[in-house]
Image (cartoon, rainbow, N blue to C red; front, side, top):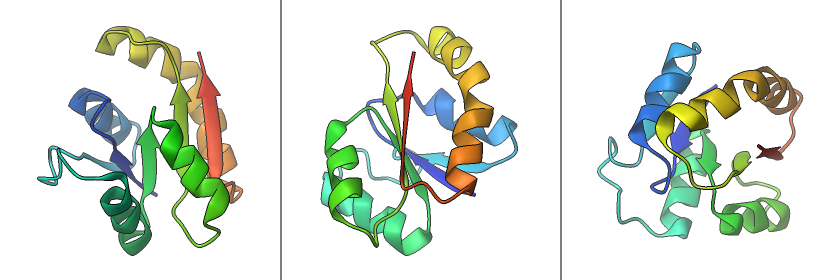
Length: 110
């Protein structure tokens, strides 16, 4: 399972996901910081990556494109990285289970 972390989330989130045992890159790592949603979507589809984003546009794309990549949609208020990690830590196993079960859109609220 590999993840692409969208621009509005911190690069440290990709490192945290990697520490959980998964491949993860932030758009900065890919040289795609200014990429449009459709470019990120195409990358996810081509690479078989799960897109991690706070952007509702990816949720909408997930619902309209059955062949698109899975989306982990973080419905969280803006917060600093340590708070983000604190919120995600207990939710992460459930998210992984749902993605493993084949869900295309996994919404996490915190």
